[in-house]
View (cartoon, rainbow, N blue to C red):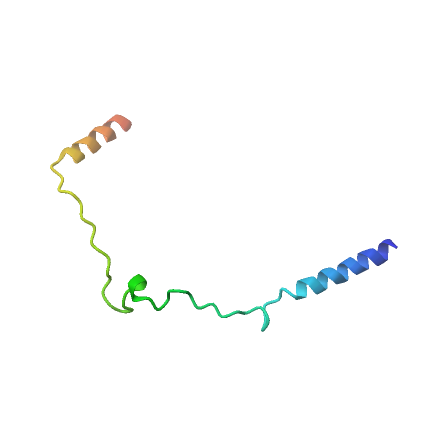
Length: 76
């Protein structure tokens, strides 16, 4: 009885796994939703449409603060 159960489960497992093999039945065309959108991706081969990062002018206070923190954490 045990051998019949093991044999049946093995056959069932093999049949179940053969269903997962990629082939003609498991391939679905997956064309993205917005692949042709110029608003999202811009013009292919053209200039980027992002804005350049704008940073405020530094009057030296940030550099001084960074140097104080560096000296405090890594004393010489």
